[in-house]
Amino acid sequence: MNATPAPAEIRPEERRRAVIASVIGNAFEWFDFAIYGMFAVIISHHFFPAENDVSSLMAGVAAFGVAFFFRPLGGIFWGLFADRKGRKAALSAIMVMMAFSTAAIGLLPTYASIGIAAPVLMVLARIAQGFSVGGEFAGATSMLIEFAPKHRKGFYGSWQMFSQALAFGIGSLVAWGLTASMSAEALQSWGWRLPFILGVLIGPVGFYIRQRVNESPEFAALAERAESAPRSPLVETLKNYPREMLSGLGLSIVGTVSAYVIVFYLPIFAVKQLGMPMGTAQLSTLIATIVILVFCPIAGHVSDKLGRKAVFFPAIVVYGLLAVPLFTNFIAAPSFGAMLLTQCLIGVTMGFIWGPTPAALAEVFPVRIRSTGVSLAYNLAVLVFGGLAPLVLTWLIAKTGSPMVPAYYLAFSALIGIGGCLLLRKPQPEARQTLANA
Image (tube, rainbow, N blue to C red; front, side, top):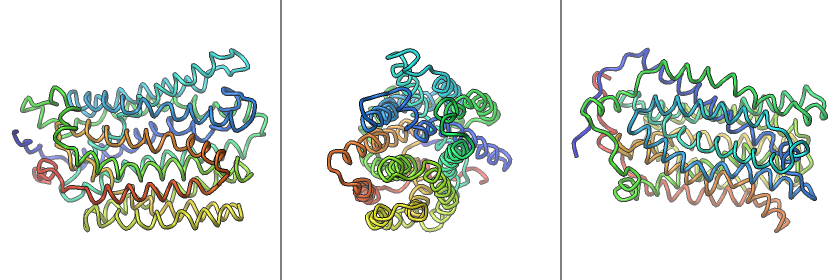
């Protein structure tokens, strides 16, 4: 196999533009996808009415989870697209698809208005969102890593996770702001639709920003040699990089479980299981996401100095050890302070896990199949362990009667993450190449 040619010199302003476009575009994309989780309780009431609150909520979080079944398909499609046509083209198309599907959710009539068509259309909109966001992580990560200077790939890659935490924070802020400023009746009636309709406005902005960024220099270097993705990038990834896939799955599982339990499910848990006010739970989540986004770039920077494993291995261990005692304290005496302590302490470890992960995933795959490999590892992890977490946890708590289930789920994911760390290889030679004049 021919080595990847050294990319041309990159001007500092090009790098800055790439980071800004990736952060803003990625944040828009994840805000659109995540806001459903912030209003799952209300959406369940309007679109999935049932004989009791638990059944209604389970139907609502199932619609949340159905999008994750289509994320691996979207990841493969967009990963191949990005490896053949370029990172820029894929990320721009993804933004348009997400904007339309998010706006559709905000405009859909409820079950009371159109009957069974309402939940069917809601599920279709979530499928479109899942297919869209399936390619976002790999595309944005590849763009950031391939624009990064030689010794700063961890720092540049960490902005992928910063932007996700930023999106979750903005979503929490919007949810908390609407809850705090509107009457319960208005929020239930129409207020919950506002963040989704906002997708109509932010979609074109994100598309414009991404169109102004140059193509990834490493992908452009491949194109100059008339090299492209193999005929079957999925087959090549699974055949030639099984260990990389397994390590990527392990690292992605611990990261995605932390996101979907601590950021998405814990507010639902606090309201439905512990009887806390929705606004209180949303405010705590907002503060926790700020903690996460602050520590992501710090962790990425430190990983460039000490190595990826040296940063996220101890973070995963501490994360797993904190879960049970923090949840025990929170459940024994539910309060804003206890929830904030739980989310923020785990949030610090999440920052150190999340920060180095994009670089660790991207560096082990060669440029020609990088988007496909990263998409597959990340989206399979999210499908099995992340997106279904709210549904699985709601069902397990109902069946077992134990509110400690989320803590055990976090601890279990930590064990898988440790396995992923142990399997992690050194970067591919292509990924270690020095950028010309970097």
